[in-house]
Length: 512
Image (tube, rainbow, N blue to C red):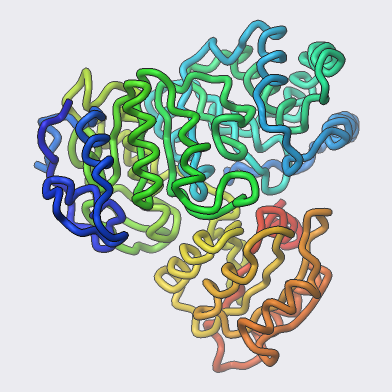
């Protein structure tokens, strides 16, 4: 157990201030008087930091070119679509455990890094995958949802699984899926079958390491039949509150379910109540903890052409001149979390007290892509896609757009999913959008354009809102608004609101 608080870089607005002040039990916190239980949790949890470490393709596949393969893939997609969708859940891992059992537990054939949180999971997973691959490990990555093609969800060696292999993976496990369906009260869901396909494909490859993103929550998520040697918790905020809880602390209870006995937990900056839950769970299962802002963190960050230049402090020491070709402070935080996760996977900070090869780390981060995350898909005017779908994601996108693009005028195209905090989302974007075009995507989960417009008018005012129910019309309207006056030569368009909206816009704009 660490008996001292390691030095940390100066970072304004660090959510861990409350925990750092644990050295002074009488210190007041932003949330009021410090909960004394936190001090007990801190004392009981082991922290991970090497003592010598103090500072001294775009991944989105197109449809198959072969018409026969495309036909077969569509047949699989149709069969999967006939199952419960990702928003209809019966919270248990009973069915996926039964499937893994009849498949011979393929998920135990390789070590895993398991990722949960509210925002940043997919980008963090892609960064972890790039780092592991740069160190010559064969990787499997499972993420959700997809931007354009369901095959994106399963990647091997940094590339989406080939359509032919995706079809084979489905056909390979289908007899076993049928067996489990027949024996259970409810059939396996869309997400459960895909999870089984991913785990089986990884074992068949075989991979050296799997990077697995939770679908929703943690404890009862279908992915949680793995025993991740490293559990990564990206920032927790309010989302899926009807299923996970109404406060970050309540949501953290469910998400902490991925922390397994003896694992290493890599914690991004968290609200204090969420941190408390995670630290207590780590104590309960004798897990080692590494926390952003304490054991690792961002030392320096500068906006650069096409991304940002970073100096990161990992578990073993500093990594300088890291170019990350993604925009926004939130992506820098994702990067340092990914770095710490890979260090922990390799034993840096425990068995080893040195940094990983810096040139390899630089090459890995420079190669990272994250489609639909502040992705520029057109110029003149510039059109940026971002898959933010909750207020926290919208705040991050708004800050990043202001920092990285310098638009003279920004037009928003927003298509949201029903049941989301659309008011909070729009309020987060209002300061950076001159006007907003509200629309809807083709999903049956989409919030109607008229319903979204009612909220938008209350936030923006009637004169700043335009309604275009069809997404193609909305894109055309926004581009026209951005082009309408010479004085707005620096105008741009931000398309956001849901992954589905972004994916469909990407196809419409010729990037699919």
